[in-house]
Image (cartoon, rainbow, N blue to C red; front, side):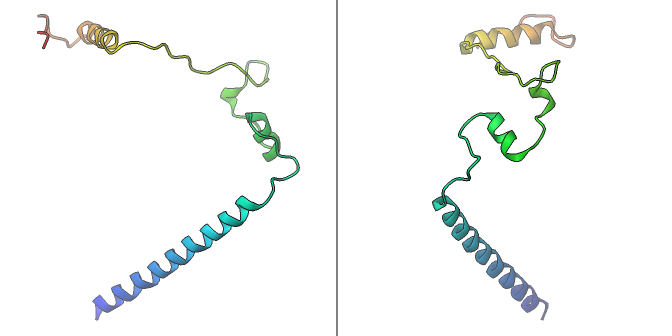
Length: 105
């Protein structure tokens, strides 16, 4: 009897999930064909902020409270060998590293 109750419960949940999926797909299709709102501008974080009327994240502000336009992270391209050498140097300088040099494979 308990097995039938489980089957009935999961069948109801499956029907609800599929119905919700179909409803979401139909809503997405209708919204994709609708023209954009009047105040919408493409690109830029300030357009998103002005559209939502939210305060910007504190990490995006400088000391005086203005939005920063420069990149927050600049990465330098390096080869695999350079990265391996730097990691080996960090490992060898760590307190628990072995005193004898390791063998290269």
